[in-house]
Length: 364
Image 1 (tube, rainbow, N blue to C red):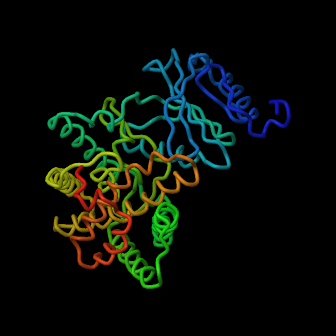
Image 2 (image 1 turned 30 degrees about the vertical axis):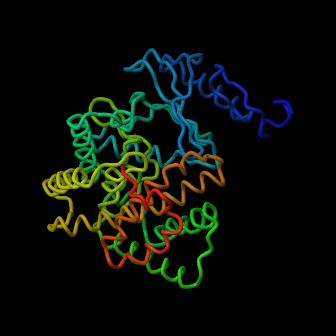
Image 3 (image 1 turned 135 degrees about the vertical axis):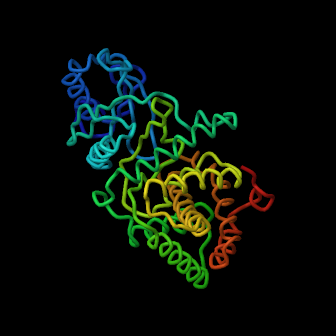
């Protein structure tokens, strides 16, 4: 099959202007090259410098290109192919984040129909890279900056302009766990009693989330999506922002998919956030214990959902490496289910899957 056949049929991976950027559809490659040629003169873009910057768990990918008129000498292109991705939420939330005074990418050029954006470049090094192996003082400095940015996000981004993280969405997210983790990854079929226990757990977790004050959620506020740039941190990957439970983003930050802390450190940063949020007049509970319980339940909900997503990435999308972090998530979930009696029925559902790591005491 050659590229002149229809322009929309899959091709063997073929390079664009450099040997580093592959395209699987001729029409998309041609559309991108026409778009880039049109915007290049305004920014001093050097098309031959195009190279991969990063990819995520979706169909989006990011390319870096040198640009003589850009303050840092480079810019980022988002390639988000319709109908799989829609760049409009990213454009909207980018504007809201900028208005709130946050360090997030600015949208310089957009072609919403084709799914191409040109963005400012926040650098090559993420918080995840920096925190792995960081000294305790350096980790504390970075995390305190992240907590301050989170408070600014929650205080400055209007929640009423974002879609709601409602009960139907929460239940659909949690349904990913039995579908993809329990059945597809572990080959387990729950009986009627186990399904009823799971239903009760999902209602408890949804109820806890929906009882919390509503703020703007980044919805993936974790070290991988925070960048090492000035001012700290740069914030990326916010296109799924919603309005929902106040503890959601803090739970994402403190109990990350790829990096974990001991509980004493989690509590220290949790208290610092709680105090800063109160000073900013955010609607946090006056009782830190109640706030922390809500955060733990919120983290449990998120971790169950993410385990489902990671297993779906493995079985549906061929991205098996994500499932390597399942032991971390089983440990998070087991700790919380052990701590709160209403959640204890979850333990018997997890035990057949949690494996030797949890049984032996998986350490972060």
